[in-house]
View 1 (cartoon, rainbow, N blue to C red):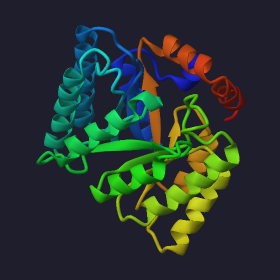
View 2: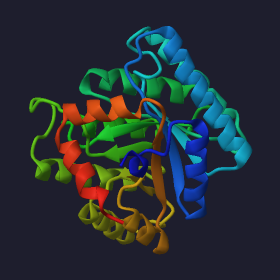
View 3: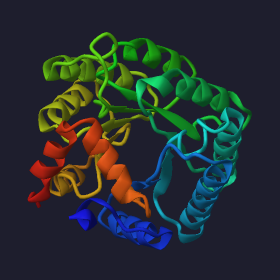
View 4: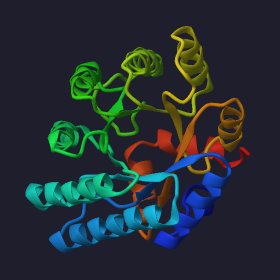
Length: 281
């Protein structure tokens, strides 16, 4: 079952999966699974692996970027270490020809403001513009304000619904509310003139995005749909066939099992999502 949703345990496994997806017309974001490291050495090793990924992506000519978590870079150990680790990766991505991109994933609400502050700060560094981006979760009540501030700085956004268990005071609890906010934020992003990613497997929302893009006379390459490795491969194919851009998030690494268990334990609805997609083509 794990092979369906995780590319493997080694860098070479991830790169092999990226090449196959590129050949199928899809771009890729590589995500080394792991979070909440407890030592500076673990954080440094994580950063080194991402440096290797960026180098291999460039040397192999892959259409791929990277996605990372601040807790994997050591923010709980030493915030300055985490900043230095991510800053080094963004600088490396910006120095590659053609330039690459580092997506800083959003974690639980305890990290929201620190994550956004770091992305804003790195994006303002000379040479880093458009080489680092953020993730916004539509179930968070604060997200519209966060989107406004990110767009003011010209920062690329990955919009998703959110997978963490958050209290009602800060997050919408009803699916209808989460979906409505997603569509509202999606329209703001598509009209911004910045290249964003719409991360969803929800066909209804995808159709609304397509309809809105057509209504606003947006080119089909002005943004991208994003989906998880092994999820809705049929939908990925149909979108590519119709001329829309699709990026697949490819997770890999030795930490896949504890990572999966933490996610399922935190929010059982994640298990239902995996189960529903296990037998899809």
